[in-house]
Length: 132
Figure 1 (cartoon, rainbow, N blue to C red):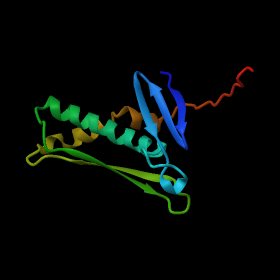
Figure 2 (figure 1 turned 90 degrees about the horizontal axis):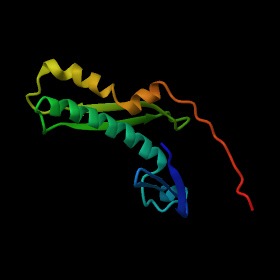
Figure 3 (figure 1 turned 90 degrees about the vertical axis):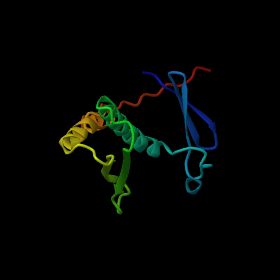
Figure 4 (figure 1 turned 180 degrees about the vertical axis):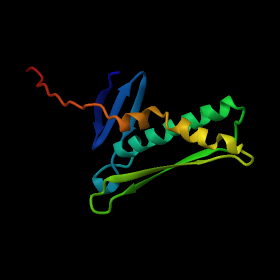
């Protein structure tokens, strides 16, 4: 997959791919206009929505369509500001069968984003200078 990144103004950064444009910005406190999520918020949202997709798929296969939700909470180290823990809480609907609770956890653990974090890819940064 290839993404084209553009700089639409101030410190906003957009990524274009597969017919979509994902807009990011920085908060006002970081010199942005707060016109969209920051790239790091988008990163956390990708974990949360991936987990949500796997929960939803699990429930739909069992005919359970309503009453569930997923909440992601990130915990940061106060000294470094780096995230040290990501908590994914799955709220299941009333009457949810006990026998499926661990299976829901296994389903969330199949999340592609989560699995990539467990075995991260190599990231190579290359530069090129435009020809005059």
